Length: 354
Length: 120
Image 1 (cartoon, chains in turn blue, orange):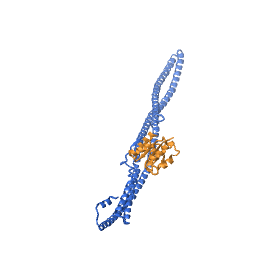
Image 2: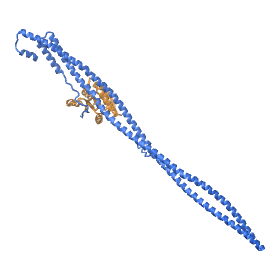
Image 3: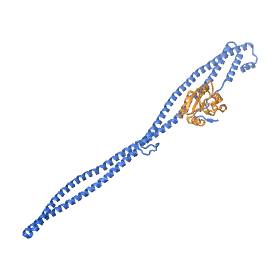
Image 4: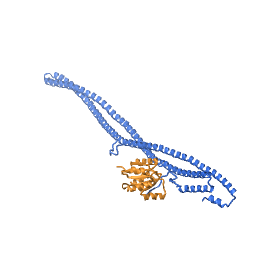
């Protein structure tokens, strides 16, 4: 029996007319209250239900968009990671050698090695050229001395010729006693002439040799000065080029390292996004629990409506109230307070292995 | 041959996040939206692990664990429960049903992979 009904009985007997008037007033008030309660509950439930469903739908849509973005982001990161690895592999093969294949030679080292070899070779040639210049100078000096000696020889021949002339004159003065001497003087003169002619020929040859040596000397000097300069300049330029390439290589390597670091950070952030995106499920479950409660409120509104119709049908107020109380009790008993989501934050939950 | 993992959750977002995490670690992943679908998907498959939610329509996760344990091919397959439920009583139910472990949502990818690699 209703507590209200029991209370009404406990209040003591009253005159019938007065009691009827009170009941009519009470019925009227109850009718009004029941209608208002049912309407208010229904109104609130009808307002909240679509609102909550809309929240659920919006959250789901937002989560879907975020999921797509996350997948695209992840693909881009993986692609970036793969590109960075490819660039790094190519760089190590091109300028620093391939560490994986065990090759320590790099293009940079090879270029520098080749250049060193080339410059060393050119330096050796240059050294040989300098020696050649010295030897040419030595031959030229010897030629000059030979010319001097030939001049002396020519002078001796001239003097010999003069001597033979004087001997011929002296032989003529001695007449028949000098006839033999005249023959000897004539032969000496002939020899002096031949010596002079030979000396002239040798002098011409030596002069030609000296001129040829001077031309050779000029050429050798030109080569000696050019090859070392060109080689040194080429080496300097190539060294600068290799240095620039290596610097560029280091910069690219540094950039690739930064890219990889960046990719790692993004991957870490993707992990946070994966964890945070689960809010959709948590919100959905929370909303579903709220909607269940709203369904419960709707059932309460139904109970109040039944009260309204019972009172309108003329059912005694205490009976109608007892019926309402019984119905509300049933609803309360059947109500399952379901709170699936306990977590108040998006921090990762516990793990328990059995 | 790589490991094949079945993930069961009525939330498509959760399935996507689990699949995303596991595929990133080169696992093959199958999906089901509830216990009934999970039993259909699992039929005839060689699964290395099953990850299931608890609160799902048609068949909840605890019932699914019991049903799977009754099948000879999944008697010893690791089953992880991934749920928002953190009540000790519910966890006990999961343990009694035959679950291998209990993970409370939300999960972090590293933690999930860590547990997966432990139980597989």
